[in-house]
Length: 68
Image (cartoon, rainbow, N blue to C red; front, top):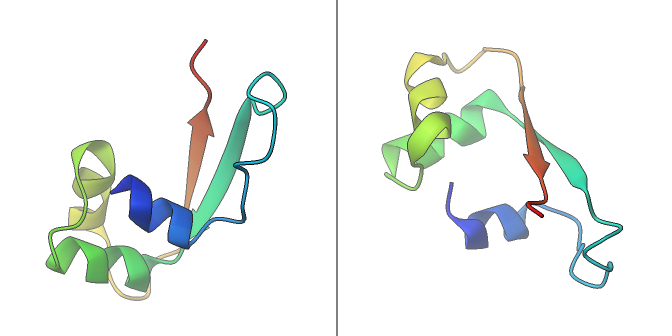
C-alpha cells in the first residue's frame, strides 16, 4: 500500500520518537482494500491478500514493525 495512503488512514505517529515507535497495527476493512486494489494502489503482500478478498470478508490486520 502506498505510504501516503497509509498515513491518511492512520492516527498521527510522526511526533513519536523512533526508538519508542517499535510497531503498530492497522485494521483495514475488506471493502476499502478491494477498492484500493481496483484502483491499483496496492503492492506486494497486501496486493496478494486483496486479490483473495470478498466485499464481506473480515477486516485485515496489518502489523508494521520499525526497522532498526
